[in-house]
Length: 629
Image 1 (spheres, one colour):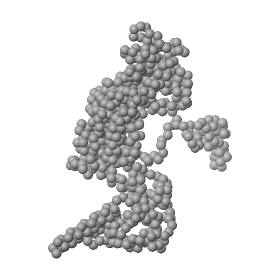
Image 2 (cartoon, one colour; image 1 turned 90 degrees about the horizontal axis):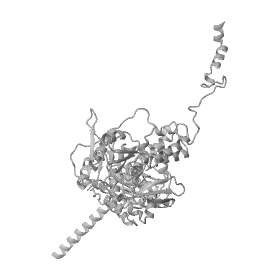
Image 3 (cartoon, helix red, strand yellow; image 1 turned 135 degrees about the horizontal axis):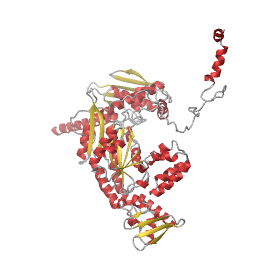
Image 4 (cartoon, one colour; image 1 turned 45 degrees about the vertical axis):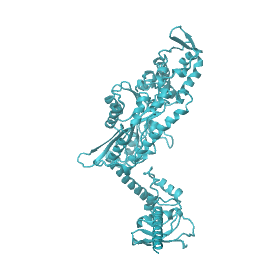
């Protein structure tokens, strides 16, 4: 008898545990993110009445049901279909644990989908589209209406679209503010998980205020720091791009070149505004991390960034500062347009020695009166290969590496600050590992991209012939033009065209000599392009970082988003066009056109301001005749 009682107690406890497990499963099911065409079930539990209403509204929008509330208060929610079909829903409050439980649910529905829905309010639609509008919080109302029409098959009004965007922006501002508050915790987590990393955040208070506003955030991971120092050339590309989220700002980056002539991220900074002070802070920290001193052995390539030139002159006075030739051409071509002038510009930029540059300048001078004077107004030494140093072994005249990095992180730039920084960190972490695996696919010790350049020089080498003096000098002349001659020295790895010294890859003249001597040009490529050097740059890995719930709290003063800067005047809707910019569509503007009067045939005025017309009007007026009499 006693054994039977014990067995009955155990069975009852097992049933209660099984019931509790099923109840937790149903409750968990109600808390997951709803997907299209989900359904309810009897016994489903919601935490509160608002969660029940949101789930019901999402279900009605996704299914296209014309649902309306029969009862809707803090104790019960009863809904039926407006098409008089059997569909019913009832959820009420449980008196024991204050949960909302689905008591009645009839899923049978008879009706047709319509393009309007009473459940599709601006509040419910903003919750439904929040994740979709995260990257484009300031979407145009027209595009938002089209999005609801194509994705949800709903027709919304302009007021609804305005309210939806307003609610989404308000929710995003709340998440942005929370992420700025945890910046100190994020810095501590980065530094603790990646020892040797430089991660700094700077904030300050506005004069007369108590709020600690965000100023700058800088990070340079130890893996990127050591990788650039041991396996990359002494050349850095600097650039800045705009953030596209709710809180505006700038992202400044420093990018190097690896052994395959691809980008190697070094460091990046989030700044509230791009100016000399923030660029100076960025360069000062970068100078400390990479131990580059005054920049005597360093080369920097940049665009025409605000305050960057003066910051470089102050913090890196001995650096070789190259300007992006593509941006120089964009400014120069506003006045001098045409395909021939474009070709002449790039020939000057890609000339590797001074005599070739002078020859190209003489040809350019024939393409327009004053064209050479305007070209020389720009600092030719900063974007022409003829004046580049040969130590970096890089002859690129553009800043494509930094711009590639900006495009690479385009999706991350739309997110809040910590989410953005985490996305960039994960992308760089994956890239370092992927590039280390990519090295195993090389067919020779030289990287694929440098090898393409060497193969091109091999094809061009057949146009040259070599004469040896018996010592160290090789005279290489063109087959079709004997006056075009260069001297190659294999011991010093040099050629009078300077291309071999600039790139570290044998030029077409050097390849001609190497083939004549029975040598392999691959063995004379600089060590920067070799597999062993490439592996040195990618041998260090970024260590994983824990989630927000595991971060330790520093207890430091919370940081607020950057202070809003109201610019003077009315906000510009359209881009301000340059006066010399070509108009692609529409009517040609009459601005700058010299008017000619139809009465007196004189330029400078039209018929309205013609002096002869004014005299005729005075003579015919009664007041003027009365005065004369």
